[in-house]
View 1 (cartoon, rainbow, N blue to C red):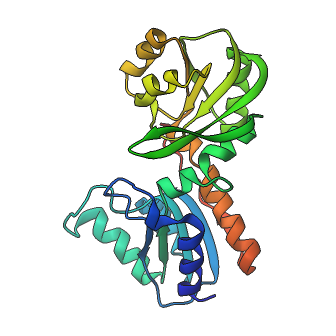
View 2 (view 1 turned 90 degrees about the vertical axis):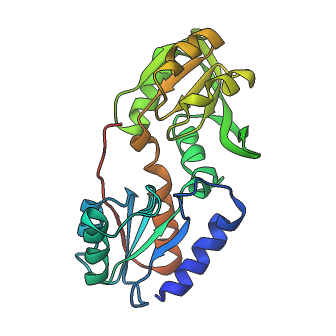
Length: 251
């Protein structure tokens, strides 16, 4: 497949030009290769180890959630140099999608995590900077501990929560990644539980004060869904094989 064809498909699918994001996200193609793609690799972070492993096969398109520019403009030395060197020598292309992949209503992290724990009537929710950043849905009445078990099974790891709200849970907000600081805004939506990846220390007691159950499920763990779904979609559309490079941070 031509890289340009895949990039056009991705840009249109994810609507990257219409979504406000952090300056370091730089959504879209971040590194081009010689122009032909033979396989797809999905990963959460474009860290050095992931780039080196993906570049072992020439003509790979690496799809990530966090790209290589999060620290802004930096000298091409140290790890920045090594990552680019590995990509160039391995004929690796790199495509990154941050908030556009969180928001997507079919392939996004939010909606896929919500559905994996059994939420129904899932709709966009929680406005931040003029855009809806999460999804809310309904769940058959459950307890905090039961919901934590469901989430743990979905993300494949431990879940910690602040029991600030009702023991019985019927409505849930999901915003993957590091959205714990939005706990007050989540509480204003009137949901029983707010599921995210991580939050600042103060968010735990803030949840108690706001009267909402806040679940911390791991930043990395909540953001594996989108890149896998995106790679699956492209593979089905193009016939290219795909794989997932797991490099968990534990955060």
